[in-house]
Image (cartoon, rainbow, N blue to C red; front, top):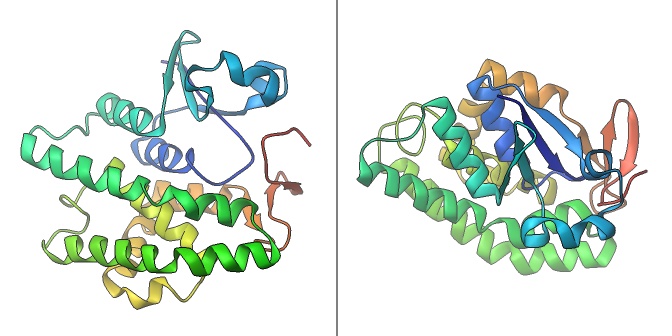
Length: 226
């Protein structure tokens, strides 16, 4: 199976799929939108289903859109789908709740600067604290390592991404939630995940002039080729 994951220069909705792909050992190609389509995003956008990325292309033919659908596909291919419908529903609820952290967290970290960054950070803090409390409560309610059991799944990697990127917003925030910190450490300790995290493009100069360091060169975050 040939898998291409198409996205932009930002650490956002393609992150959980990449974490899950590395965990499951599924080979894939990460391709920037302009390299895959040969055109800049404004030209391509009207032809892309739902007019947004990420998108997964399977065998150069099948287009899988929406990040949750992509995560579900990876789980199915990897044999991680839960057979118990109750557990599956619980995992789905955690996945959806984690994805709700995307706005305004990811755009703020990837793009906001100066006073705009500070205002967005301060405005979203009550929501983040409330959602982090919810996630910590769920983890504390069972004796498992991750949200459902001792096997990390799509919901875990989605939650991990948003908890992890929140450190770029306020590095002290996660320290208020010891169980979430433990969860992050457990995900970080998985060898294939640790390897990916050590090699992925570094996100730097957040709140000043956000950039991704790709192959040793800093590129401004965004949807345009640089």
